[in-house]
Image (cartoon, rainbow, N blue to C red):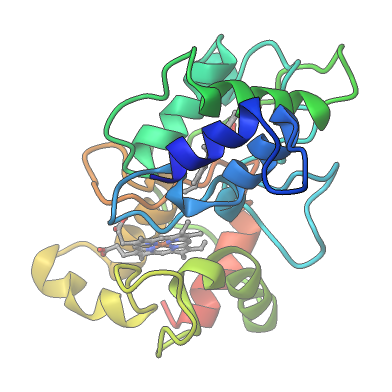
Length: 232
Ligand code: HEC
Ligand code: HEC
């Protein structure tokens, strides 16, 4: 088991390279095998940058975790304990069967890693605005929409229409998945079902393991441009 192998590295040297807890945490952060579920293909790095701002051309559903350790509350104030904030992701998105226990080597190493990228001990909590009521958004520019797709959706869903390069076969083909919406959700415009998925992810009785996009993560303007690009 990876966990056992890597936790052995914590107490001793791994091969020739001594591995600190923070370095071990960074490895775990980038490794989908942190979750023992064979159905998981996400790592923490799938959804979070670790630099002060995310790389150019990337839009993540989650905030950058640079500075996250000392924010004091997380998920817009819904979580007041850092490990709970992490475990929410671990269980909801990475199909972790059980929460990582506080005293596990994995939790401690992830904590040390997050502290190592959090130089500001006075960091403030960040806002998190869930779009509860789904309404239409103004359509935007298709070229912008193509860039939004590449930045936000492509890593998981792969190329539009073909899914080429997608992270997991379970990620639906976009926009083709919407072709069934008229039958599955009769009377509801396909665009609204699409917007609801993006805004709610797996929550609000929707299911799956895609993350939701808050207003802060994805603006209505970018979503409107994406809809134009998707032909919705
Ligand atoms: C499938 C996407 C996804 C994965 C995988 C994921 N997260 Fe998240 N995470 C989110 C979203 C969305 C939020 C809510 C927005 C936010 O607060 O950053 C979030 C929130 C957080 C927060 C709170 C940030 C804040 O300031 O509010 C922390 C800390 C966090 N995640 C850590 C982790 C760690 C560590 C892992 C790996 C064990 C992980 N996440 C895996 C999507 C993900
Ligand atoms: C972290 C990976 C990930 C990211 C990023 C992501 N998705 Fe998904 N998405 C999935 C997975 C996995 C599924 C299938 C499981 C589910 O429905 O949650 C899915 C399903 C969907 C569905 C189909 C729901 C259905 O069954 O009808 C739509 C629509 C969708 N995603 C749109 C988007 C759009 C648009 C973006 C970019 C703004 C995006 N996704 C970003 C992983 C992701």
